[in-house]
Length: 129
Image 1: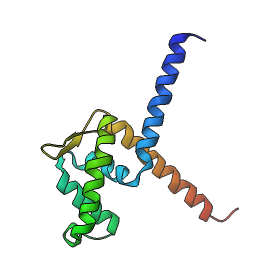
Image 2: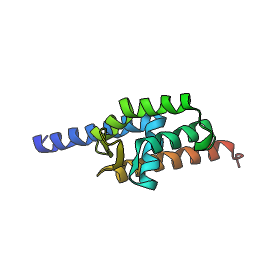
Image 3: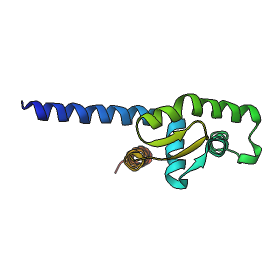
Image 4: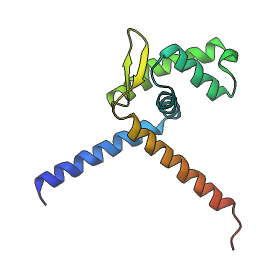
């Protein structure tokens, strides 16, 4: 096998592994969806919105404890991982999150996975002819 082809194949495998790792965590998926739809925002706003989604409520009704939990996990774990994969940019000093070069590709893969899951669920619920 050509070494160049082998190296390219390894690079694709690494990229796919990164995308699958990124999409594995629900909080990262919510972050990708929010940033893809809304663009640049402050970490505080992102944490409030994600907490509300996870708690099935409005941002105004989110408790401080729930908010702090999401805020801390975003700032300490999820945002740095998304930034390392060039899905977002994260300025921890200014607390700003923005889309980066890979957000569209990762968002498309996220949506494809959602559509596939919905199709599978529909097929399971449909009566057999």
